[in-house]
Image: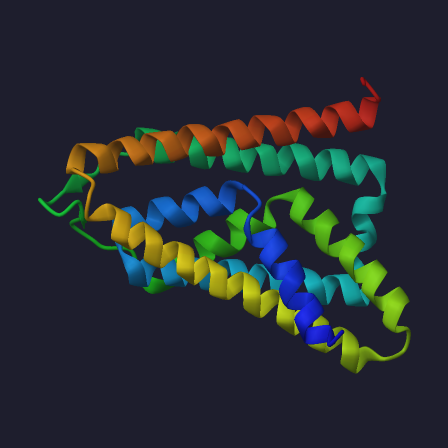
Length: 211
């Protein structure tokens, strides 16, 4: 099978998995609009691209150390918990269409950085790309060109499906009242904090072999 198509299949598989970046993508699209959601998706894309690059040069192997994995898991969990609390407690003013009203609107780079760091803060995304990279490089050997085709297909598909999610969220917003948009923000905040707690719990369980 063509490496690009194989990568696209992997991208489709990854795109249906639930994670903190997915819920942030939906929340941003509903509250901030289509363009802001696309910028956040672009940030997620660049974070995945960064991780694939780090996998190739071997820097990501730092997670093979148990203490590093524990430290990274706890820090990542705290980041998600804090972000979830901020999202839950932040007060938004909405117009009749459910769009955010701010005295000072965030710059475009804010949404890209939000997507970038929210995705890259998840250690399981790191481990996923590390496992995929090891498998692909083992399969293709010295054929780096084929590996590039594979990851191009995977990353392009993930980005394309994220844009589709943004578009769907934009359509859903038309049927939501402003009060419901505020509830979405609170729900997303709870989910993000929950993911943070899970990350810390899993890091501790894995390190101390509690199960």
